[in-house]
Image (cartoon, rainbow, N blue to C red; front, side, top):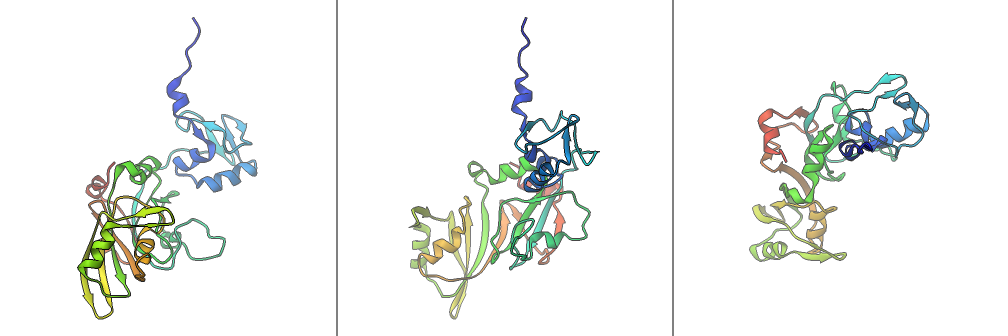
Length: 247
């Protein structure tokens, strides 16, 4: 009788670059560089193609002769300061969120989504790619809450226009909810909740109404709150906090 193909094994295979990322060893970009330099082997054979599909749970991977094994799962909360970019390495030499992790004993971790350079607040980082992808999947509808300072006062009529949304560059931009936190003089603070993650969604939505954003702070993801974590500091999520954002 002919041997049936191992469908489970085939389904679990990913590109070599993604495998190193899933194992918490390095980013996909760094994995591609390692391959180009001829420094990695799978089951004793040198890898020449970063797109080679392998099973990270079954195949033996080595880098510079050292076995790569799965790192412990790490889940971090970071209070991102304004002015840092959400990337590992920046070609322009700007500061990155990884500067906040200097000196911490951590495996390779990646940001779960992004906050742009001018934005601040709650950023999750992990080496659990399955968990991260679940949070980022639009079907999960994990709410993200922001406190936004605007350069002009607002009223209920304007808030209602925000809630109805508007088309910008062919996209309908809306928010799950928008409410006024406080207003004084020429500025106001709004609380805006999104359940989808479009590029610069809040800035583009308010900009369509000629509202300038002075500060944009993410304060919650789902039920997980930023709380009193100091700016630029990171800490591990507790078991209870992790359960708040389990998908």
